[in-house]
Length: 235
Image (cartoon, rainbow, N blue to C red; front, side, top):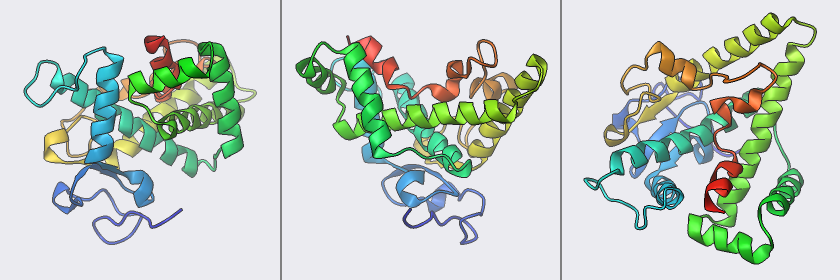
């Protein structure tokens, strides 16, 4: 998996480092993960910012001080943290997907959403996506689905109330655990960062609160990285 992110105290299981310890050109770091997963670089953030601007049909990517920049900046970092948190959660649950699974799922998405390969390529250009960006989102979709399925299996045989409780316990632990492991640079503070503003109780729930019956786990905000969100807005 590569080197594990070193944080304050020098071990992989230490709490998140302080922002003074962040590497250069780093927007955020999530501890307990390999560096390649847990570090969000400024380049990755800028790409997410450009993609967010494309999704909102803003034209050129706004710069600091421009109208709408702050909201877009927060959304871009939220998107990158979603990716890191879900990958970390899946790893801790022993969940993984193969390149073949990603390719199969992507083929289905393309068939359902695009008339032909040319339309798909046009979407990539307009959305400022590389094929790697798409593959990542498809992988996140598959990981999220497997997470929900594992929670459902653990709740098998329970009443509806018991199933809902199992989901809620997972949601509470998920938001609190990954927030505690996340440190952000001063110019990029969110309430999802351990060194950011304290989230309200409602906000903590919003990190993964269900908007339907427990079985409809796909409605959790945990699932936000679904590629379909972007595709539906670009068609």
